[in-house]
Amino acid sequence: MGSEMCIRDRFDLHADIGYDVMQKKHTETDILNRFHLQKFLEGEVSYIGMASFFEGSETWDYMQDMVLSLKKEIEHCEMIDLVLCGEDLTENGHIKAILTVEGMCGIKEHAREKIEWLYAQGVRIASFCWNEENLLATGVKGNPEHGLHPLGEEALQAMIDCNMLVDVSHANERTFWDIMAHPSARVIATHSNARALCDHPRNLWDDQIIAIAKRGGIIGMNSAPAFVHERSEKRDIPHLVAHMHYIKQLAGIEALALGLDYMDFYEGCEELHTKNLEDCSKSQRLIEGMLTRNFSEEEVRLIASENALRKLKEVL
Image 1: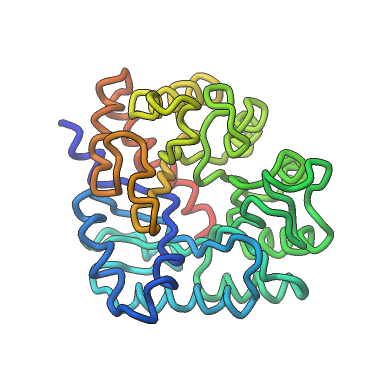
Image 2: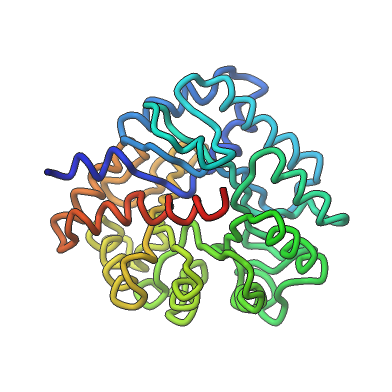
């Protein structure tokens, strides 16, 4: 049995589709069908985390607008199903969409109420911040002496109570360890690589990788070129696969997943990609790269979808 089986069940934990919907919704209609669906199908994506992405200045009203606009787009696309419970993962030939939130800067009060609203809309994975510092927590460009704030503690407890996955991909080190101090938090990193191989603050140090794995979490490998290698000529599939091998040796194969963070739909970012991974339609090339670089078919299946599915089912 060849690589096709692995590819057909691919789970991409992170794509900023909600952001793209908001950019296009005033001038375009049927956005998922017209701009994304064919790429998903060509890349054989079966499951995808569709992120509503907030940089740091957005209001709660704007957050609600993006989440609801994305949800409406999913509901209008016959080939994409919104995942709300375990039964929604049953294979039926459709792509399965999981709502995620990247940065909850719009939550400035009443954190529990707003986390519960997000959960009611279908959000199952969320991070407190993007790269900035907000009233909840501190991102990688924030004050390194700051971490999770009191309002963030309230939001974290609400996420624990709702059984949501806590995404630490953009958290600074202080925020990361503040979150990990809560043993009930279900922690994942949807789109981060190994900092030992690429010293970028968005990547994870060894002790962070080990802590996530010990918690039963997963780490989605990110194809954004700046997180693959510091040298531009080495931002390619072999070096992205090298991150997988490194994390496998450090924390085990069960800790690995995909969160490829393609940016082809961002204006001005069309060329911002790892070599030969221009968009999600090209993801088969990554699978082939894994198979030709000492990953077994069983290991590729685990990384491509099974580890992420296992983790998602814990909260559905």
